[in-house]
Image (cartoon, helix red, strand yellow):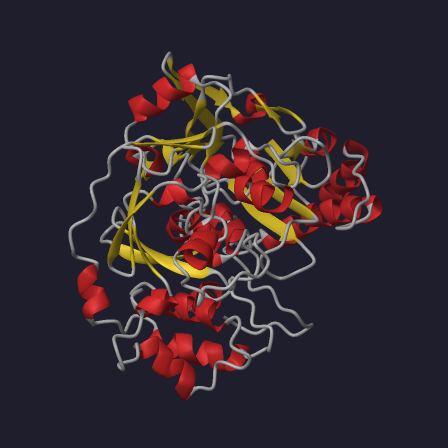
Length: 484
C-alpha cells in the first residue's frame, strides 16, 4: 500500500502526493481547508489543534481519544477514523458539546475553543471518569488563553459519560482494513508495518530508519527545527507492542502501550507509575505516547527512567535475530545513549512485583503544575527486614546527571545495613549532594536540583511511614491542600 487510507469526519481519503512528515494539522488546514482546527504552539503544549480518533483496539471496547494533530504525522493516520470540530454538528443540529459550551459561556475569544470542544467530545463518550482527578486531567492539555476554565470544567462535569447518540453507535462500526503502509514522496520513505515480523525485517534492512512511536519528540524536531530523515518507521499499528499485562511475576508493558492506559491500570497496583503519569504530560499526549518512546530516547530529564531503574525493571529488545533482555542498569549507557543495536527496537519492559516489605514512591518537581519538563524527578525504593534494617535501596533521579534515571550510589550505600529511621535517612540525603553534579539551566540551578533531590528522600521517608506505597497526591497551587 502506497496511499494513506483513513477517514475524516466520515469521509474516506486516500492520501498521496504530500510529504510523509506533514502533520495532520497542516493537512487539515492547508489541503482540506478544515480551518476550525487551530495552530498554536505546534509542539503539543496548547491543545488548540486537538482532534479525536477512534481507537478500535481499546479494551474492553473501542473508544475515542483526543490527540494533538500537530504531532501526528500523516502515515500514522493509516487505517484510522478521525473527527474534527467540523464533524460534530449535523446540519442545524448542534452536538451536545457545542450546546454545553454555549450554555455555560465556556468560549470567549474562540481561538482555543475547537480544541476544547474536541476534548469535551472525548469526555462525552468516556464511561470511566469517576474520580475528581480524572475530570481535571481530561482538560489538562487545553490552554484557554482567555482563562475560561471554570465554565469549561462545568461542561466536562455535565457531559462526561453521557454520549448515547450516533457517535456512540459509530464506535461499533466496522474498521478500515489495517494493511501495511509503505509510503514514499520526494525522497522520503515512511513505513508502517502491521505485524511484528515486518517491523523486524524492515529495521534489519534499514538500520538508519528513525523509529516513530508517539512522535511527540520526532514531530517537534520536524516542526520546530526542520530536522528530517530519509527513512522512518512507525510501530503504531503493531498490536503485540500495545499489550499491558500483570501476572505472578509482575507488570509487563509493551513498548507502544499508551501512557493513558498504563496510568489507569496503575492507580491501585504499581502505583509509582500512576503517580508519575498524572503530571507526566497532557492528556492528548498520553493518549498516543508510550514508554518505549520515552525511555528509548534516554533523555536525562525523562520521568520514566527513574521509575524503571528504582523498580529494578528490565527491557526486552527485539530484532530479526530474536529477543534479548537487559536490566535497566545496563540499558542506559550515557547521555542519550542506550544499548539498542542498529537492527533492534524495544519490545517490552518487565517490572517485578513490589514486595510487602518495600517502600516506593515517585516524585516530579517542575515549574508548571501540569504539562512541563521536570526540574527534578525521582523514584525511591527501599526494602527492610523484620528488624527494620534496610536490605535493598535504589534511589534513581532525573534532571541531576547526564544519564537517564541516574542512581544515587553513595546515598544507597549509606542506607543499606542501617536502621530505617530519620537519622540515617538524613545522613543518606546529605550524600546525594556528593552523588551528582547537575548543571544550571533555565529550568533550575545546580544548587536547586541538588537540594530538591535530597528533599525527595527526606519526603519519601515521611510519606511512607504509614503507607509503604502511597497513592498519587493532589498537588496544590497554594498553601492550603484540599481533600480530593
